[in-house]
Amino acid sequence: MPADTPFSLSRRALLAGAGTAMVAPRAALAIDPPAPAAAAKADGLPTVQMEARPSIVSFQQGQETPIWAIGGRTPGPDVRIRKGEDLRVRLVNGLDKPLSLHWQGVRNTSESDGVAALSADAVAPGAAGEIRFVPPDAGTFIYRPLVPGHCGELQDRGVAGVLAVTEATPVPVDIDQIVAVDDWRLMEDGSHAPFGGVEERAGPGRLGTVLTVNGARAPLKVAVAPGGRIRLRIVSLCNARLMRIRFDGLKAYVVAIDSQPTDTFEPLHSTLPFAPGTRYDVIADIPADTKGAVVAMIGPGLPLVQIVAEGEPASARRPALPPIAPIPINTLLPEAITLQKAARADVVIEGGAKPGSDGKPAWKGDPAKIWTVNGGFGLLPGEKPGKPLLSVKKGTPIVLALVNRTAYPQAIHVHGHVFRLLHAFDDGWEPYWLDTMILLENQTQRIAFVADNKGRWLIGSSVLERLDTGLSTWFEVT
Image (cartoon, rainbow, N blue to C red; front, side, top):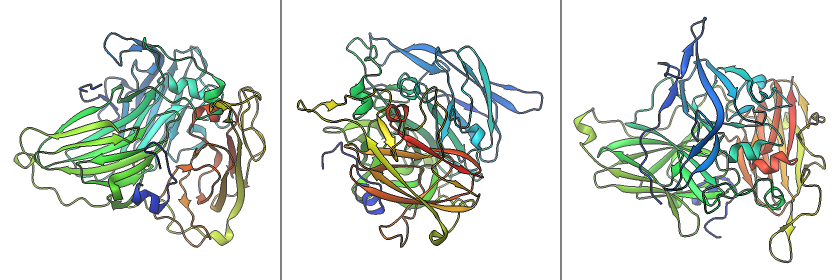
């Protein structure tokens, strides 16, 4: 298998393979204590001010790249709150396109999930709106645009960021580091390659030519005190790139996948699949003389993060930490799913280009309607949502058979819920929760979850050009 080919996120796969810029620590928009960007309201709750507007960045000396950004940067400011705290955001849209923010991985209220035309209203250009919710879970989440027809360009131009909800009992680490990975398709002068090409929409998506971490050209350099412990919140903000990441020179332990705690494990071969929207929380101890790296397995390998042991030993500043241990499980999630009583449905994905005689993706149909689910197009600009895939009562178990009949791997995200990957004969499931998964071409994967969150919920592609051109459906919980 080539180094840059993704693979299915099964238990076996997860365990089996499952230019340099020096970056200063990024400021976070914190709720407690409020950051300067947070202004107190009359009820005493702070509001995070998030303004999307055109800006300029330099990924390479001597070049300027125009972006659309929140707070004038990309990714937007890190938002950090504690579990149980109320998050209120005032979103100001200084762009010329409508904007709504989806909070990927948050088991949110339907009204705050941010899916324009399904569960929320987009903020019009020049207007402002308020978003308010209490994340029920701790973990690492993403905020990104979700206005069908505009998702791909909005995110490709820089509108995205990270929400970190810390545990009620802090995980003992010396450094809690966000690693937000993105890629950019740029011309030689630093400007964006043209948007909306049918080859991108019908083919593999908009694959970038420049890889960044936390808004600067990779790799990110992080110094850790010898004997220190670091938590890496590794997030893919890439719009289409499916890849794997590898840990070199680090004894790294995965403690959460897609925001949910899992059995702490060290990946076999130190590799993990990494799809758009995927998040891993990884903890590592850093002995003296460490020179470790997190590497994107693209070509010969491209370092994303370089970690070095540097400075005064951690033991000179604090007592010894206990051994790395699992994060406590999320007791809000069910211990078991009653599959015998489940509502069931197929999610059959079709469409997209086929390789032409020149090897490039070939598509001769409507460039706005390319991908289908069960023969129909999902959320499209200017159109009302069709009928739901399922409508069930709260508490109903659901089993979905995801079927990929296209020539490309698919990254599929389920909103408002987290799911288990089922074994082939529904005789069990993998021991971790996901909200985003990779479905390889010509494969079927069954997933199961309990519909415990009322509202209208999207199931759609995390490759946003595909979401923009039909690859989505939705279900309803009453």
